[in-house]
Length: 113
Picture 1: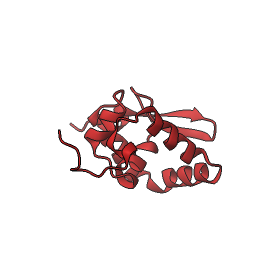
Picture 2: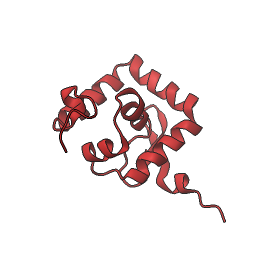
Picture 3: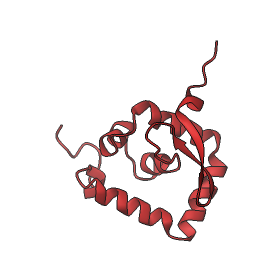
Picture 4: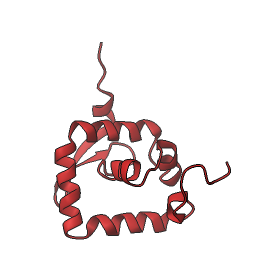
């Protein structure tokens, strides 16, 4: 029997720019997760540390959803970049979580655990 793990953790809600995929529990936008993971270089554990409302399972579900819907989500990211929303969102999120190593511009391995 197959179980739709991604579908259980990701839902579509109406947003200002149309339908948006979000984590079903934490309500974090799916499009933010690949930015943190791929662009900013955060690990799943670092994302959970910075945003404690999301679980590791939700991080990987968001990435799986992104990889399955990459063109659509990249289009949403580009649309938000065009009107400045992505930059503002990322700046606010980093300001909100200044204890996170990425906020200090540190790379993996530069912090003692």
